[in-house]
Length: 235
Ligand code: GLY
Image 1 (tube, rainbow, N blue to C red):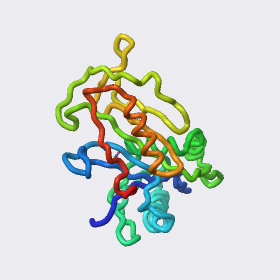
Image 2: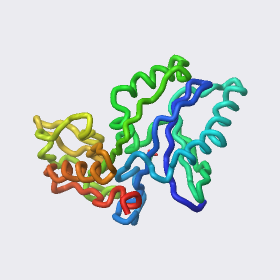
Image 3: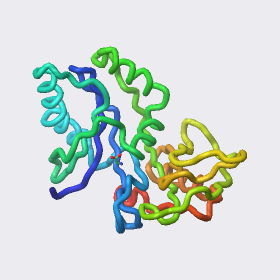
Image 4: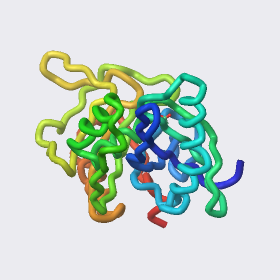
């Protein structure tokens, strides 16, 4: 399929569907989207290519028919539905469905939703999605993955990560631990994708600048990140 790929997240309660955000991630390990595929080296939300018009088409033409058909067959779907879409000329096509939040898309979605995420998921679990609304801020979020040198090939575990203690944990800046462990009171790398450095802003550029400012405060010589997360949207 030709076009630009983006992810559309909806909650389902068996009948009703509620959009909870859009995101784009970067699968390739290298800058400019080059090199081997990874689980995702960074993500941002919202996805500019998933405009309101494209989202409405995706809901009407792809997602609602799926959810309605599952209910009709007696196998209603309740939970989070992650639609991977390919968008060309304003038309969305379905690449795949996942029944989970994406990683690292989840981190940017959670930063934007904040505490209401729990109410939304509870409403999905209790079949009350038609009663609930998402309160959107006109904001943007970006997460930058810090990975162990060598990832997605062989990489070493156990290197010490410094600088984390002083980093903010607020509704606009957050470091999510993906592959770390605590050893003798120190945080060490314990996986390939290790940290998700995440920030919100009034614009994507501001979110990007805040996220990379946090990255620069992490002292981890054995780690690396891509420096161009969001380049398509920012260009
Ligand atoms: N970041 C892609 C996924 O979680 O499938």
